Length: 161
Image (cartoon, rainbow, N blue to C red):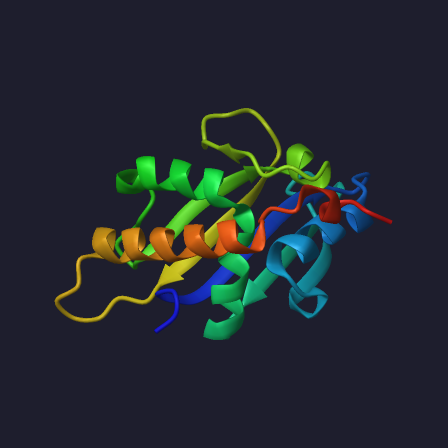
């Protein structure tokens, strides 16, 4: 059995003057395939242009391949702050520093940090009588092993070209 993940979602709210191509490339690397990227141009509450960039994977096998890309260091950080990250609907929440990501580095941030971020959500695959924290730990163990085996994150890949 693979990693206990149903789906994975990343999203960025970017200003109208942001480098959307660079952000998109970083999300493509993070998710593992450009077919999962969606860019929506819209307006903010105050009327200025903005973009919502999403990378969503509904297919379990693709989501399972994508999550380890954040690397074992980030997975270990998630493990250490697990209690506050899982909601009542079994979504595991995390945020990555957007500036660091477009520079090829994975850096977890907290909601109180004053940086632009990529919001991540992982829907855990939990069955009756399973404890969500135990399932998350199983996810982290498996993802960490995959990340180490495959050398994730391969930092130079994020922003080559």
